Length: 460
Image (cartoon, rainbow, N blue to C red; front, side, top):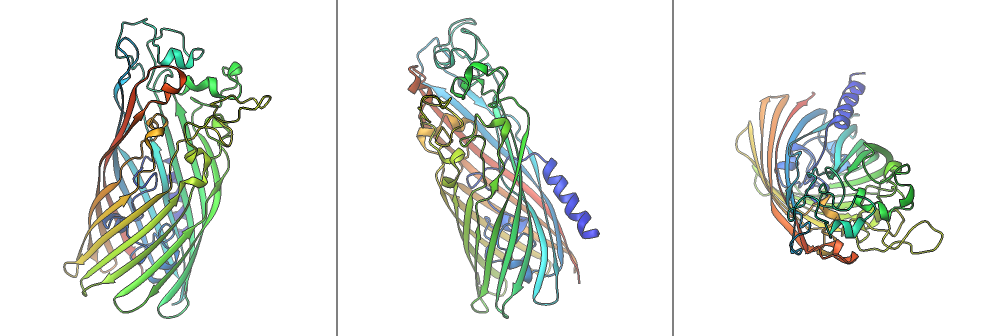
């Protein structure tokens, strides 16, 4: 009963918490506060109960324990449009609001004898949040025809209106995506040095978008948009689905440990209220990914760990389809050239990414362990797709991390971590230039900071 209550409480907290992390694409740079202090390197480490997110095979080595924490995450995002002729909507510079989020984490593990374990990890697989102001006309007087937005959407907003946002809609502009994964985990030792683990993945996600009415002309039925809007301003929609993560961990010697884990694509139900936004009629699965890791105990007090991770965004059309796709130009389908919603329609254009993580852990004394790490990821966004990714500017690449664990007693410990993701930007010609208007160029950029704390209990 206590175990069930703990899971329920953590799940509720994660579900209700707003999430907006976008470090390795839109995955977190690490899972578990100890991993976060080491740049995310955790595939060959067995130090806490986040094996359901890192490597299920690690859980059988961590013993009976509970980990509960929260990360205070602050992403700073901005967008700008320059180079349009004077007297029209150049867009200027806009900063996204909603800059501080509390992201909880939870894990529990119970040994079943000496060679098997059963536990659960509750974590955020990824997320994205933007919240830009409306009314971005920066040249000309009120009432002046905005040749960028009026030339683009015409029917969506009255000609000469002064309340366009950066994507030619009305009011505030942005999205809010949260992805929660519950990973029950079974692990077993196959001999004294090797283990296997499996985590069925139970996924939940919610999403909302606002201020995208400028794109109503690209929906399947723009003429009935007022009564058949599945594009924007519909509040939160949710979906759920399932996947599987498998893991192996092996100690090759007293000083070298290897690990590997693979997660299938999580097939999620569709966002029916946003089926005219996402390619595939609202489909938004969670991507397939795998990771390899090594941990070397260089001295009794010093451990060096490194991970390689691959995230295959290309398996999800709504994420990977180029924003320049022209959709299904087939008579009678209800779609027009440049449409949204169909399987090969416009997406965010994200590429697959490679992530490299390295961390150092040093046991300063019997009570204090120090950590430092570095994480580098590919930028998934190309110049071609800058306009759409004003909504999702996941462009950061380099992360520096610090952390420590302090033993409060023989059965409890306190862990803290800090992460800074350095400012990155991507620039390119505005997508609006393709619609016969001189929109100039755009740039999106972001940097991030996060400070986390976790409390752990070990049960004898």
